[in-house]
Length: 95
Image (cartoon, rainbow, N blue to C red; front, side):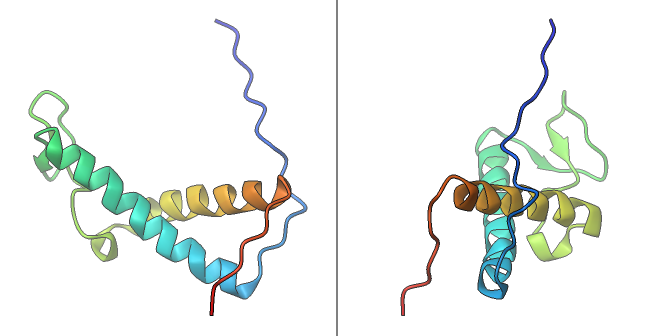
């Protein structure tokens, strides 16, 4: 299989301070959604990942994740926000 990813170029998108704050909230929510799905599938917390036993070390509250794991969630959220803006949509907080 010859697959070459072609993500939307978001390198010129600058996020405002409000949107950067939103990034952290979305990152936390992404983790919560992921964890809820895993728990519903019968996964449990384990010190190391074991797919056969359905154990995963990231089944903890977002605040207890390592910085590396938080960075993964933050980057996903940030790229999603940048993509939305690059596609011409506007994100505004309602008063």
